[in-house]
Image (cartoon, rainbow, N blue to C red; front, side, top):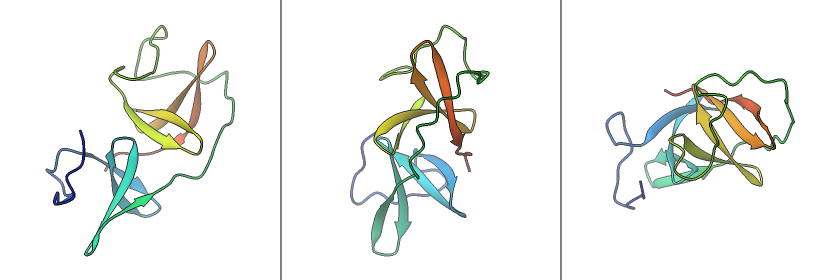
Length: 106
């Protein structure tokens, strides 16, 4: 879902709300948008490229492949893209998903 500059983020705006650094941001085209009185500010997640090959993937079948159109919301994370699955970030890595930490929905 693209973002209209006149759009106001809120509980029914259509964007996924996530908890980030003690406040609520909204996922828009993979970016975290934080509403302010002067418009949105784009927030970034701290980089995490840890390999967690023993991570038990919950929230999807083990054969699921993350990528554009996979059904999970993309989230820019450092220099790569992760996918939001059941409140945490999955990163496709070879034959497994890495767990790149929590990003709970609000």
